[in-house]
Length: 174
Image 1 (cartoon, rainbow, N blue to C red):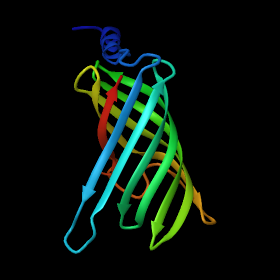
Image 2 (image 1 turned 30 degrees about the vertical axis):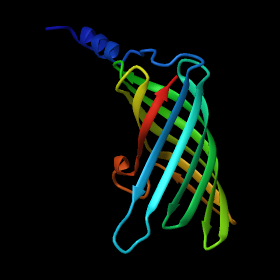
Image 3 (image 1 turned 120 degrees about the horizontal axis):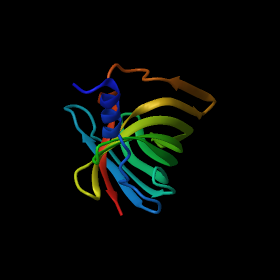
């Protein structure tokens, strides 16, 4: 049987960083959703993002979201910084992301705006050299402020299953 030291070394080598990204790589990422239930209006969302790698692990980019929810029409614009923190094999890459943005909701012709910031977790699973399935699980820390109200949350608050609240999409690397 192998010694504990050899087993530890083997386990660490399985998590060794594989350089999927390199400095100056560009990514386009996004999600699309649509939901319609009997007796309710349809809800939809289109959320594209574009990023640029500053190093092999750090990327910066911009995001947008356009959609309609039960709260009204939604328009969001923001920026993010992403750090890839864990690589498992060559295909699975986990990241932490800091995002800031401006969110606008329009209900019955009246617009309200708020500032939002959050730190969250996500992952990419590469199905080919340039295409990955993307999951943004949830914000671990979030702050919103607008119309004289502000909210600060830490942890997976408000729900029991962080996977159920995630956004799933596709990432393309150039």
